[in-house]
Image (cartoon, rainbow, N blue to C red):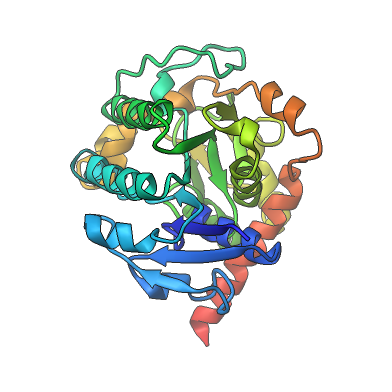
Length: 318
């Protein structure tokens, strides 16, 4: 049986991958910097390794027996330029020692602004943002290692994901506001379509692609269920929560003002174009190759996400 090593297993996507692999009876090891992050996000039966990904020798130990490595490590936006090159280099070198399959979680930052039509995997990588340029540099390094035969690279590319354990600054406040009857905010226009994928669907795509030889060396767009506008998404969240909708959009000027006191908002400014114009991905390559995989409807995923937040809030009161 192949051994799956999930780096960043305490995060939203990493923990979902661990849950998916564990449920399928696969041999999986969860790797975290803080082992308490794994509490209640995946089964206690999953072996856990504690690793600081900034330390090359620790990453090497973490994957010393890996067949498939999932790079789900992330840091706050403000630390991307300083830490992500080192972390990704450490992961790459460790994976090379095993000639392992490396699943690198991709996004759309590297494209820069998109057009009105869904974009395919051949869309040019012409990012101007610091984060997009960095993502492209990291991907180029990994592709080179793949061409040289040092790793087997799998690159699924996702839009924003939401779901259980997704507590980032965008989706955490939205679901919490809906449950409490408060006001939620969308970081851009409410009337443009924006692809979103339930995190469990993204995890299943990663797991499936990691085990298909034909997927290696390729980029795969995995867009999730049909795109919604920000307003449509928020309407569904409030309806599922049984609350009257209360939400608004945030303009770029307002986001800049918030950025004066919030580093998260400040770092989001250069990416806000994703929320002021359509973000649509052409996923036909993936759906044609893997027709058996179905995405969870937003209505179902939103209901499950709200239940996770309810249970988390109830547990905090005990």
